[in-house]
Amino acid sequence: MFKKAACATAAILTVVLATSALAQGKATDYPRKPINTLMGFAPGGGSDVMLSMVRSQVEKLLKTTLVPVYKPGAGSDIAATELAMSKPDGYTVFVSCTPMIPINPYVRETAYKTSDIAFVANVVTDPGVLAVRAESPYKSAADLIKAAKEKPGALSVGVASAPGDDWFAMHMFQEAAGVKVNIVPFPGDGPSWQAALAGHVDATSNNLGVIYPQVRAGKLRILAIMTDKRSPIMPDIPTFKELGFNFTSGSARGFSMPKNTPKAVIDTFANAVKQVMSTDEFKANALATAFPSDYMGPEEYAAYMKKLDGEYRILWDKYGKSATAEAKK
Image (tube, rainbow, N blue to C red; front, top):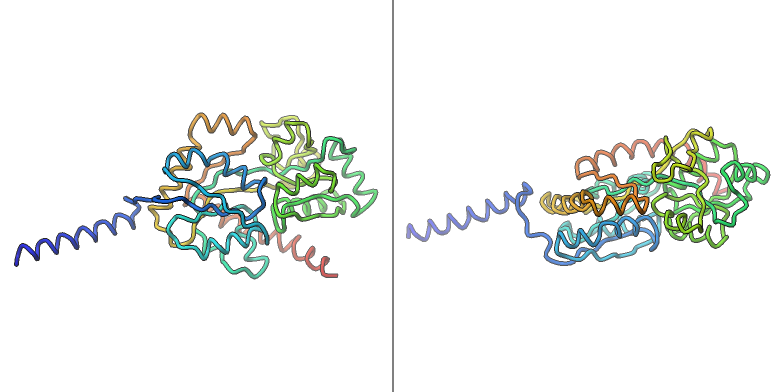
């Protein structure tokens, strides 16, 4: 009798200790199957670029497969909603991009809240650029601004959805330069630069890491970059600030999971990303491909998103509300 009681007590203690260890993030057998990776934009954009930079090595470390699942539309709301409704077990991750996350729930009614998302690891903070196709008559930002002033609203600039970082950037550009352009939203960075390359729009407001392959191939030309200082990756490109236009813009992209995902699972995935980004191979590849890598772990990434939430609300109140009212006229 005493032997049976002792065995039962030991079994219970084992379960309690295992549960406690998992809750504290000390032990987990995650992952045991492929991980669906939700992307809120069409293929060929920033989400694709980011995933491709880390995917194969993260898969090796985790001994699993990251399966891209494209859910473009509504400024990544479709993908974010699916994430929020997913089981918090680590088998659904989301390529979370700023400013869409966290600004979308503030801008409009969404089926998710920012608090429904557990931020896991930031991978890139990609500066904004204004670019044209190689055959464009606009050889400099000054050329484009001159044309925009001569024919207000006639010059078209592609952006990735609204309110994306390049959408915000073009509103800031209009105010800083005293011009009016036709802002044309696309379902992602890829379709935006592809439209510029095909001549369907005069320019694309995009991100350095996204369009760099096209720039290096001589198909697109960057007129100016939206940073405080010139990028060491492309030191010949002037900043808008040095041209006299006081604004900056960019997009951070990383991995997120549903809220209530166990800390052990979050830490396992985040640590795999960190290990990949710490390798000489990744660093060399990032430099060669103009990938502005910027690792942030779960706590830092969450704090960064909270900070951006406040900043983007101010920008939306300044640019978004007036643009929305104008569009309804």
